[in-house]
Image 1 (tube, one colour):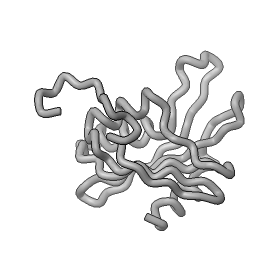
Image 2 (spheres, rainbow, N blue to C red):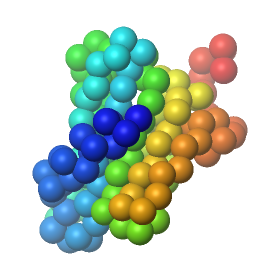
Image 3 (cartoon, one colour):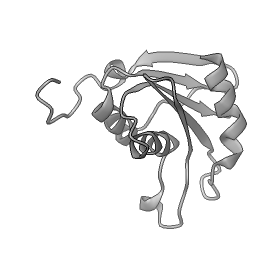
Image 4 (cartoon, rainbow, N blue to C red):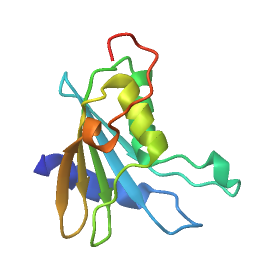
Length: 127
């Protein structure tokens, strides 16, 4: 896990956050072992902003890799930042029990998505 957090710390400066100044980097690891990176990208029309987690998930899915295993979220803060509700729902679409690793300069917290989003909305009969 440490190696994935390191990758996230190395890409956080790619984030485009001129409005909030709150940069986030994310790594998605799939069951095949592939990794996909993402950073938050803000927009002057705030509703068009996209979170780092969704960037990484969408990159994986657009490459045909839907078996999400782990999502790393790194913020350059003292306390880790959990994924927002929209990101939780997007991750749940592909693995409602994904491992979520929230990392900051000082701390790492690991939880299952099912703990962060216990009553996931799904149209899939298996969930």
